[in-house]
Image (cartoon, rainbow, N blue to C red; front, side, top):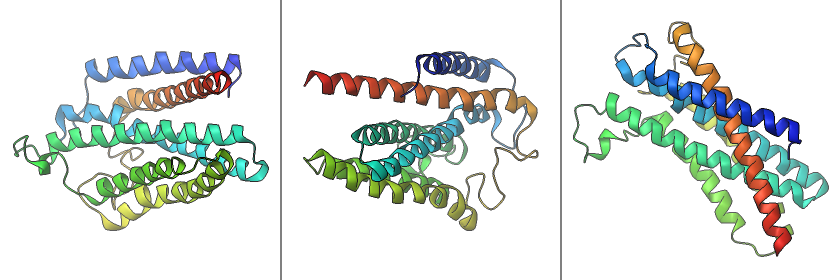
Amino acid sequence: MFSQTTHKIIIVLAVILVSYSIIAGLILKVPKLGTLAQSSRNLYYHVPMWFTMYTMMAISVFYSIQYLRNFAIQNDLIASSAAWIGTMFGVLGLITGSVWSRVTWGEALPDNDFSAWWVWDPKQTLALIAVFSYFAYFILRSSFDYPEQKAKLSAIYNIFAAASLIPLTLIIPRMLGGLHPGGSEGSPVFNQKDISNDFRIVFYPAIIGFISLGLWLLNLRIRIYKLYINKR
């Protein structure tokens, strides 16, 4: 998918920035952020998962549209691979969010209480629906034996799935409010009153690093899949 030079740059960015965000995120002092205390460090990992998912899904829908324009099976391969990587990061976003929920919203509850890990907050629930819409994408793909038919119907579905991401994860939660930051108040990522520059020096590199990691994994998945096809 990428040239060798671009691939090497992506690897370097992923290794350096992800390593930096993990190490600095764990050892640097974090300023007080409401009642979050030390759990605010999860900002460096939870939120970049979603940025990476958005990036992968944008790549996926772009190549789905390209497939519908020229019916080149290569475009379907990239689209499905990007959707797979994006879904993986979406699941990681849900998991890190659930852990964060446990130590903030469900702090007083026992571990065996489901409500300690998941409170069905509007943003939390709609994010789950968004990830499930891509599970449906892969179920749809597995329902067809003919590559062209699978690619065409998957591409059409992918356009609708990608179009639902922004309303489900950004617009509707702001209308409904809820416990999750970024409800009716706007994004907690870019508001000066929500996070300081002490957070940003780790948080922004983390976003670039995890997106680079996603691109690296995408390129590897495409290359492995091509090797598999060539051996058949």
